[in-house]
Image (cartoon, rainbow, N blue to C red; front, side, top):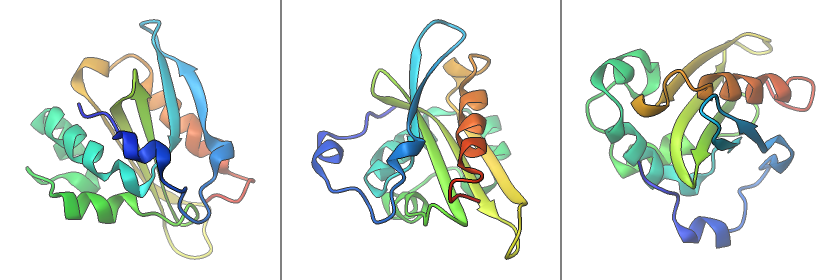
Length: 144
């Protein structure tokens, strides 16, 4: 797992970044996860997340199902519009442990394709539930 860099804390938020969608959640193992919309500065941590999950987990994630992920590909993936394309990350102790991505299907549409990726040590701890709650909280507040 790769922690988002210190530079991420100092950078300006991307245009339209919905900071109101950030929240802390409690995992089943007692740890706290910070759940927030993805930022372009998360690309290096996304490469680390990709490398830290098992091949079976990668196979289940539609958008990241290849065996390797370059920084350039991660940068493209981490740049979303927070409307028709939304992604959330889950961080535990500053380390990226989960990702959820949502792409609106058709326009206008209330339907979305969703995919989730959680590092193997955090399977079954409620990370996916928190990531799903993040997306559901966007409905009616400017999100898909």
